[in-house]
Image 1: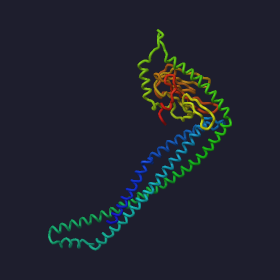
Image 2 (image 1 turned 90 degrees about the horizontal axis):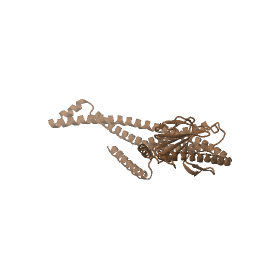
Image 3 (image 1 turned 45 degrees about the vertical axis):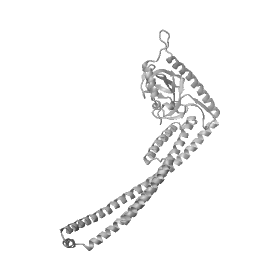
Image 4 (image 1 turned 30 degrees about the vertical axis):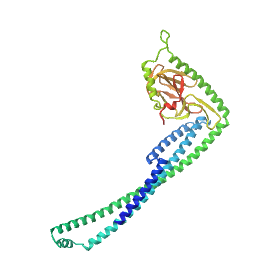
Length: 405
């Protein structure tokens, strides 16, 4: 019994130390669970695979582009996150291995104590090894009550011996289970280390690819500036056209030349639209953001980008979807592609760089309804949807309105 008390004391001390250390450290940093880390890894892996798919679509094109650079930068960033997640899971498994080794040692100590106690019981049983001795022990009682007490003692003694045998069997089974778990954890750790090393190699390849694309772009920086300026002029031209269309829509007049107020249905639609800020679906099912809203300088090149919306790089033939219920105001036919303007009460959304269009002017559309397909640039092989969101004529940051991914 002293062995058990000793083990209980050891376990209590270890648990106390673990709790106090864990509790103080948890205040500094919250660790992710194994399930959370694996979920994060799957999510990152999906992003990496999708980005790789987009890069593969333009592999045959020798010309480097800003979108390619953005994609490869995202690839590098996501691989870094994945390697970090693997490292955290390896640390978690290392901790579990240490805990299990300690648990196994304690179980071995318990098993040793149980076997020692059982050996003593067997020795005592051997000394009184036949039923005759037990009967003599009972018949030697002074009275009936003593005989009953002795019978109860013998019964409890035999039950105790059986219980000890069961305890040994259960402890051995538990010990085997813990050893099997430990083996699995070590194998899992090895697989994670292999995955981590593979990701490190891929990361190095991505970094080299990024540097190669960056060098190509830096060599033709002046050409890129001219191209961006041309693109900016096109955007400004489209912006003026959209602004005129929105103003015309908002300033509709009746027969008496008085401005028509919004109908109750349009007022409610505006409220519903606002109520869904941060919840609107993406205008494409899958994609990655290659250019954010607003005026910003490119991180690697001496270029300034002024974006009135957000650009989504997607796969060829990707379907464009309405982000909310509304009415198609106009389908704009531009030199290379098309744009669709949709009204949501006092809010408007613009879907630019479209190839096929499935809707018509005046048509009422619903959330996630298919509007058409994204246009693919034959020169670069890239498919990029340009999406804008406006409160009347004032541009908004679409990423504030769309659901986070």
